[in-house]
Image (tube, helix red, strand yellow):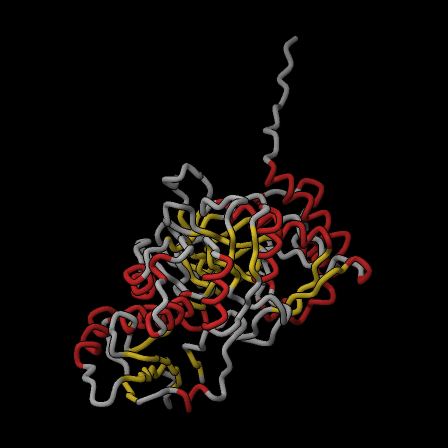
Length: 423
């Protein structure tokens, strides 16, 4: 008599890691044990379908339940990093030795996508102290690659150029707006920056591309003045993972063995292809503070098609903005990034700042503050803003925005605050 034997499809490496994650947090975290028990999930056979049954995790819930979420004992914690706290209170993230190794592996794999080799020299122009994860991650990833590293940090422009001309790095890691200042300084001081050693720049903290993967105004401003190759990146401290462009420049690639990602709408449903949604992540291989279905607060578009580099994994678009910065203005939904993309195209603007308030009936009020040369006309700029975002916010002109900025510090990435939300 023939017997029919059920053949079970073998689990992929990612599915196995997800199963390990579920079992790990169930044993180690009172918070995650209660969440899994509430859903009546059999963790011994935890899979992708079970993941979708779990509620999303917000930053507020994370902050409230941190102590019950941490899975590593104090004796296992090697380092504590901290989120920037630009939109809420900062979160201190514990990292074990294995977490640090994972961080180095992630950045190593990301940097390889840019064509880097051990023969390259990298100048890191971002903070490496103050519990800042990115600076440390870059250093550790480059150490794993075997490349040379110059830990300049956020030293003055003069120091940056002296180091470039002395040690001759082939890469810079920096905030794009800081690169603009580097170029301006070189022009003002007769530095032949076009013929210096720098050939590639890994950009952190600000978009350099639009949703069509073309260079935006900021990226174009750099590229037109300096013959270098630009790479966009996106990361967050909570997920301890980064998305980095390859040589094709068609979106941020995911190191898929370290992260499971989703793109959700305002109702926490998966977005359709091409739709904007919030990036939601489930971390794999993290021991200190594993996160399941964590809402990053960042809005993007998820791309799942084959990249020209040959990678079949998911990619994300440039970040449009934060969920809290999604604006409803005169019936139109818009994001601050769309306004800045227009402003950055105009040479007359020296500095810009967006403030958001509520009127007496709870409608959003958007005010655009611009530092321009005395007597400069912004008629064309206003028209350009209206043509792109379809509405015209209020404009305020100044000779300098310094008085407005005195109470707001430059963040650890050396990036000026651009949006002040008073709602």
